Amino acid sequence: MPVAEVSIVPIGEGPSISKYVKKAIEVFKKYNLKVVPGAMGTVLEGDLDEILRAYKEAHESVLKDAVRVLSTLKIDDRRDKENTIERKLKAIGCN
Amino acid sequence: MPVAEVSIVPIGEGPSISKYVKKAIEVFKKYNLKVVPGAMGTVLEGDLDEILRAYKEAHESVLKDAVRVLSTLKIDDRRDKENTIERKLKAIGCN
Amino acid sequence: MPVAEVSIVPIGEGPSISKYVKKAIEVFKKYNLKVVPGAMGTVLEGDLDEILRAYKEAHESVLKDAVRVLSTLKIDDRRDKENTIERKLKAIGCN
Amino acid sequence: MPVAEVSIVPIGEGPSISKYVKKAIEVFKKYNLKVVPGAMGTVLEGDLDEILRAYKEAHESVLKDAVRVLSTLKIDDRRDKENTIERKLKAIGCN
Image (cartoon, rainbow over all chains, first blue to last red; front, side, top):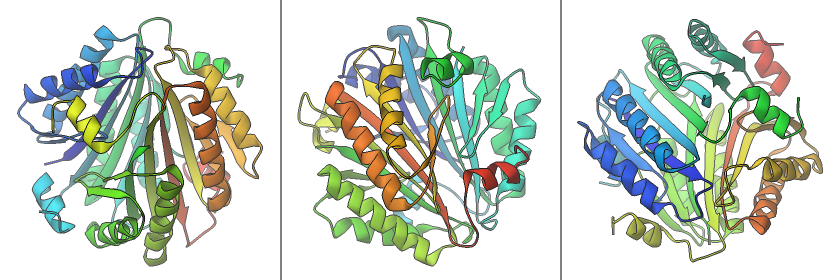
């Protein structure tokens, strides 16, 4: 089960981008994913295909409203043990 | 046409990772993409779906040989003009 | 006041890296920064110089214990209004 | 000797950002660094302090002309062998 972080940034629509970030978060919530918005990106937990589908829809959805979009997807995936947001936070003493 | 950069890093397989990077690049080359390997990541140019499919296969392919993988996909996408590697390099005087 | 996200990943020390992440977080806490650890990185708020100094020390501190380190610093900086973690979360309805 | 990649993106100044990227590259060239501009970021090779100083000046220099800036610094650092752009490209068969 991968844990991911997504950031989708419209470029050229003015310096305030929360409207676009909120739209992307709404897209993520339609999928079978745990969604944790943060100050520098949104953390997602779930199946790899589901993450990729959600990322693609969010990227295209923001690009519909913005001329240019720079988006980043970071995926942490492992086979040796269960990988979840909760486990990762616990491992660093934050849960 | 988006331009993307991908970095796929195995964690826990020793500090030398070029074997895995080469495997990922071989995966990218199977797709209908322009593939430009660099010192800090591989730049891809092509259709969004093609980029996502290539990224997914490369991520899973490295994860087959490594216990843990951290991979990053960055996509630059715009609707106002053609977006290509060549155009981007030309715009900053490097072509 | 910039808001930043830092991720410091040892490569080649095995797949479990929480020990190193905890060490980096301890370094961040020595600085005059707001420190918010997360599942995919640690968010920092404070002065640009302070962020850069903390990032440098954390990077070097993990590199003392690991053969290879891949670290990422992302900075969001603006001049038009106060930029804080709290404000950013509020703007997307998460506070 | 670390190898780094820097990306400095003005947000809110319109979708064309090459003017800002060129300004950042000019800053990098003032430092004692190898500078390799690419389609998705600029690769730097040199001393860690020099990289951090160049990154800081480039970030602040773009922020002088733009209301908001999102910048990313990725550093690959290792102690077991010489780390250079040339060596990294050679290791993946691209040199």
